[in-house]
Image 1 (cartoon, helix red, strand yellow):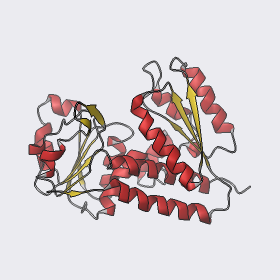
Image 2: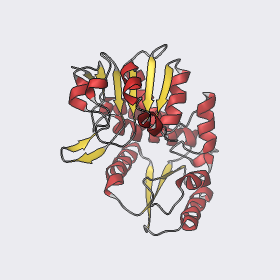
Image 3: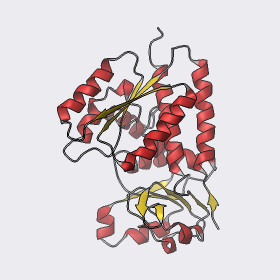
Length: 283
């Protein structure tokens, strides 16, 4: 059976590092502004985790809730207000957003110096250059887990399933910086009937597609490290994008769902807030 990649343990270490870094800064208490448009069950657990961890660290957490029918301009106006607010250290736009909105444009509206999620084009560009201090939280969480458990990356076949701007694309760049031989799979890979072929080659497999148990356990290479970003509601409860039980019998390491990537993502968000605080002029 695979070794569990316990996200709670990794998150505890990152949180301790964040707490130590905050104690060493003399710039006042940071504030994280959360903006959500409408309320969905999908984001509730993530928000509660954010608020709880922020409270533990002494980071003020402001939850700004807009109605589900808020317009693009209305959301942009709220973002502009937080951009101008000197007391606000970081801003995060919660997903999913209503279909009528353009999330990419909203992310661009967040000032780079306040982008706590690390998804502004300026930060994504730094990821490509290998110089990111504030990186996309979930992508950074995946790499943090692999490094915490000292899973070899250099020269290994890494396969990322999913090419989103906030997970798959930035993570592929991060893995390249670790000198992993990196392949990114997406919907066209599946349409071409080649997904299983790529997955079977992976020494390190990261899946972030939001499709319950899409990756079959029988596809997993013996001894591979599997990081499952997916969180899906099913008749069996919360499940990932990978068939956990079957994959666990073949993998060397695997993240549980829940309790894997999620807790580390929240911890990386708080780390980003501290990085943004470092750049703020001393009062």
